[in-house]
Each structure stands twice: as C-alpha cells, then as structure tokens.
Image (cartoon, rainbow, N blue to C red; front, side, top):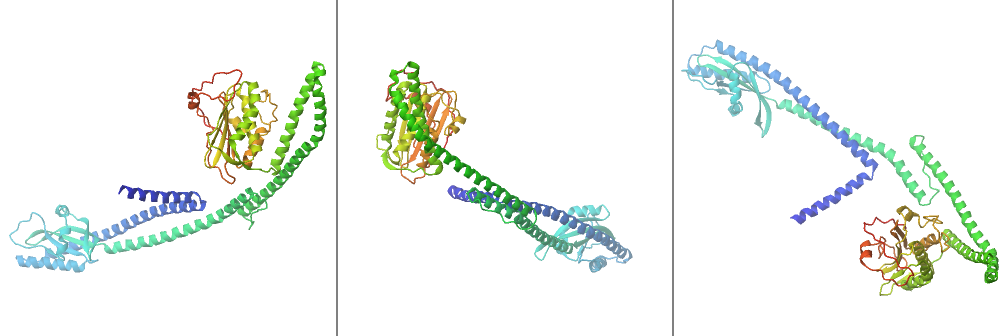
Amino acid sequence: MTSVWRLVRARWGRRLRSALRWWRGSLQVRVLTSTLTIGLVALALVFAYVGQRTADGLFRARLQQVLEESARSTQQAQNTFDSATATTGAEVQQLLSDVTSAQHNAGSGGREVFLLRAPGQAVSVQAGATATNAAYVDLISADLKTATSSGGQHWQSVALRAGGRLEPAVVVGQQVTVPVVGTYQLFFLYPLQAEQDRLDFLLRTLALGAGALVLLLGSTTWLVTRQTVLPVRRAAQVAERLANGQLTERMSVQGEDEMATLAQSFNEMAESLQDQIRRLEELSTLQRRFVSDVSHELRTPLTTVRMAGEVIHAARHDFEPSVKRSAELLSTQLDRFEDLLADLLEISRFDAGAAVLDAESRDVRDVVVRTVDASVPLAERKGTWISVVLPEQRVVADIDPRRVERILRNLVVNAIEHADGTPVEVTVAADQHAVAVTVRDKGVGMTAGEAQHVFDRFWRADPARARTTGGTGLGLAISLEDARLHGGWLEAWGRPGRGASFRLTLPRRAGIRLQSSPLELVPDETQEQAAPVAATRPRSDPAALPDWSDADQPAQEVR
C-alpha cells in the first residue's frame, strides 16, 4: 500500500510540476488564469450576495403575506366560534371540522389547517383535534405550542416532505376560544416551494449569465493577450536568430499601433547591430591581417639581425665587459623576440580559424615525461622539485603531441616561475572517456578574480613581478586555444599564499564530448598534508611544505 501511495504521489507530483512549468513559461496562460480566477471570485461573491438578498426578500415578502392572511383567517374562525350555538360534544366536534375545512378552502397556496386543544385544558365536554392533513401535525413543535399559549401570533420555519423531497414551509399559530370546550390553538401550514422555485430559477439564470460572462471574459482576455504576446514571441524568435548569427532577420511591421512601433524600433536596432557587427568584423579582420603581415614582415629583418647578433655573441669574449654584457642581452632579447613573433603568428592562425589539429594516437605519459625533462634545468635554477605521478597503464589518446607538449610546457614553466622554491606536482589520470593532467604549485597563488583572467592575452596578475623565463604573455592564451582545438578543457584554480592548480582535460577519442574530468581541479589539502611529496627531481635548497590548516575555498574554473 505504501509503495502504491508513493507511486501515485510521484505521478501527481510530476504532473503538478509539469503544469507549473507550463504556467510559468507562458505569459498568455498566466494572464488568462489570473483574469479568470479574479473574475470567478468576483462572480462568486456577487452570486452569493444577490442570491442571499433575493432569498431574504422573497421570504420576508411571503412571510408578511402569510402573517396577515393567517391573522384574518384566525379572526374569521373566532367569529364563527362566537356565533355558534353548539352545546354537545358532537356539535362542537362538527363545528371544529367545519371551521377547519372552511379555512383550508379559503387560504392561498394550498395551506394546511390544524385545530389543536391548547395545553392544560380540562373540560367536561370531550372534543378532539382536527386537521386537514394529519401527517403534518408533527411539524408543529412543542416550543411553538408553548409560545402560542402565551398569546399573540407566532410562526416557525419548517421543512416538509412532499413528493420524495424536502420543501420549505412556515407554520403560523394563534389561540382561539371554542364554545363549551374552551381554548384551542389554530395553526396554518404554508408551503414556500413556489418561492423556492422562483429563487432557484433566478439562481440558475444568474449562473448561466455568470458562465456566459466568464466565457466572454476568458475569450476577451485570450484575444487581447494573444494580440500582445504574439509580437513579443516573434520578437524573441527574431532575437534568437540574430543571436545565432542570422543578422538579416527582421520583424514584420503591420499597422500603425504600438506593436508596429515596437517592431519598427526592433528592426532599427537590429539594423544598427548588424552595421556595428559588420564594422567590428572588418576591423577584426584588418587587425588579424595586420598582426599576421607584421609578423611575417618582421621575420626578414629579424633573421638579418639574428645573424649579426650571433656573430657578435660568438665574439663577445673579445669585448670589454660592458660590450660583452650588451651582446648577451642582445642575444637574449632576440630569442624572446622570435618567441613573440611565433606566438603572434600562432594566435593569428587561431583567430583566422586556420589552426589544424594533427592528431595521432599517443601515450600521454610520454609527452608529460618529455615536457618535465625539458623543464628540469629551469627547476634546478629556481630550486624547485618537480614530482610526477603517472598511472601504471598506458594512457593512449588521440592528440596532437606538439600542441599538448606546448600546453604542458607553458603550465610547468608557469608553475616553476610562481612556485617560489616550493614543489611542483604533475599528476596524470585517465578514465574511459578522458585523460587529465594537473600541474600544482604551492607558491604565491592567485585570487579567484585573477583565476578568471589568467588565460587572457598579455594579462599578468602582478605586472611588477619579475620574470626570469622571458615569457611573451601569450603562452596560456595559446594553451587554451590548443585545448579547445582538441575539444578539451583548460581550467585554473588558485588562492593567495596557497598556490595554484591548472587542469588539462582531453577526450581520449576524437568526437567525444567531455562531461567530467578524471582529476579534481581543487587540491585535497588533507591528503597533501598527510602524504609526503615523492620528488623525482632534486632541488638545491629544500624547504618545508607550507602549513595549510584552514579549509579551502571553492574553485574558480576557466573553460
């Protein structure tokens, strides 16, 4: 039973959530339901008020008529009793019967008449009660009889059963004096079904009118909201197509009303946006062409300057110390200039969409080891250990080895540069769909805001910080483009004083859409404190690991 109840509750819950989503997703439905709800509530209040006032009015009018008629009938009966000459019990009984029949025939609305002996009467002549319908005698309550005995006219509402249904009625009573036998109580039973039928007819008419009004209100609301919502929907569809790059889409302008003005304004806005986007595209094309042309044109003089610089650098030992230092600086800056030109050409290829992925099945572990080996001299100069954690099994993926090695080289060199002598950890892991490499340092770190801009071109967290590796400012930007070219992710996390972590996630096969990564981006500080660092490269000045005692903060990811 419990499982059945849960199933029913879950099914109705789904239907309720679906209806709620449908209600939230349509302005026309919300306006229509709100208008109908308010209209129904207002009509229900009016219906209740009018029905109650009408029922009270009909009852009061009929009651006044009944009281006046019963008072006249009672007076007529009393006059008949006063003029009667009956002296025996049989004569009195006949008199009672005659008066009852006469009052029944003289009344309106098919009233019933009852002549009942008043309570507490004790006389020598015996005479019974009379009634036009003895079945209704029980409708006269003891309270009404007691109230009537005190004198005056009294009435009471009752419900009588007729034709298998209960009908409203009212009983009116008053005392009369009968010759020989003393005081009797004369009661009149007036049915009010005719008034109830009129009230029911009126309520049915009101209900039909209310239903027609609700239908008219709903139709009017639907028509008005449709005239308002349809242009908005068309505007949303056109805006969506504009956002997808279909800049020639426009709204149709019909009429001269506010909606036509809206459509005209929307089209003018779209025209302005198209013009601005076209100009920006032309400017961007010119900029990319300029960067590409300048980069290519600089190669020829750079080659000449490089050849002259190499000659001067080779003969630097014969120069004076100041000239020798100038020759070394010239050679270093020429190397950096060549790297900058290469990066600019690579960026221009990405911008132009001309970058091509030369993928092949390779063991990612080999690429990681080769990258780390190439970074060992820099790590030794900086006094940094590089630890590498590799899986035992082969990690084969469809990658472009040159681009992946460039990504890892940028990450490892960047980590060494900012580690400030602390260890740098490189970890590789894989699952069925993806392979991931994390590069973790425990140096100066960066803020959450800086982690969001770390892949921007020529962006540096601290411009005053000295660099010793001669970076161009484009390495991480190119690495991000290389990762995207593979269909992968390149993400960054960092906290000031706690270091930084970069994670590269690549699909193992071309066409796989990444859903998760085999490695966590945010480092697990508990495990880092408990487990020793497995160093694979020595460093000249070991230092203790930093003490991280407080909990870490959420990661800031850049994809």
